[in-house]
Image (cartoon, rainbow, N blue to C red; front, top):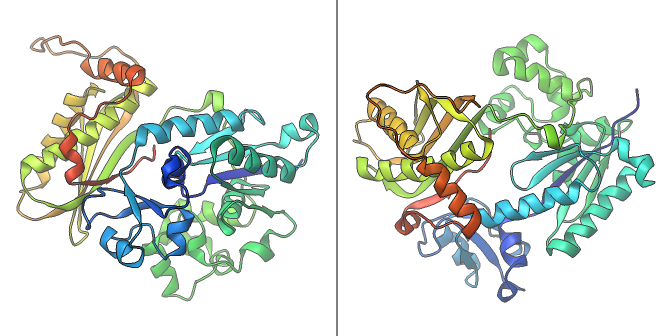
Length: 396
């Protein structure tokens, strides 16, 4: 079987890089994208390399970052701009192969195996050309990993930053990868890392020596699959960009700048998230028939509920359903720090079962999306920025 040549391209400091590349007045300055630039208790969502050199870190409170970098320029996030730049990056990658699979806004896998002969280039040459084109055409940098599988290509893009190509060939992957810390790989978060550390498992090499039955008891079937990936036995295909499957669920979450306790504030956050979820559902032409909400307290306790509803992608209905769920599990008697909503059991049919008591209303959510797409997004409530810290974007 022919060895695959898979690239993983990752934009360095994406949000901050986009801001700096589209604004000449930021050249040479330490820059951070934050939840609310006017509040010192907001957090850093992204920072450029100059800010990083001062010690500014993602997740750091703005006040702390300003203490070590007084000249730090703090900017609010501009998600629509980031989406536009992300789409342009996808178009660049499609010059090399149709096997382009996005991972969030700033990362993509590319399978260039079938393009090597046609382009008369090696995988390393293609990776380096992509890096140079991104620098020239976008004004920022990407780091690229190249390997025979998706997991090692992604690991390669993380190993050396910024603006570097890291190759992990099949005949050397064990020597290069197995000494790395276990948390170097996607799928091992802090909780699992602590659990494995407690039994002396600290590296990727330690992990692959564990028995399947033990891994399954800790991580379920995902643990066995991860081990197979890291042994080089399982090689997941890169999806064709033009036939990407629809998402299984669509959700958004946010961490608030300050703890919220009143129902009206929770309702504002839910409506803010519902607008984003509705926009993406309409974009994919799907309706959700199951909604869930997750509430996290200031001491990180989590509460979750999920229920079935009539299929919808309407902003108002999504918000109403999720607020109803929140009311079922929350008494608004303790400070909340984070809220996440999600729609699942997605259906593509536009035929919805209506009650005989329903009033037929115009599809306002679709109209809002069309207006935003044509004329640019107008925020529905400018004061949301006063207590919204960040909105997560990953599409599930």
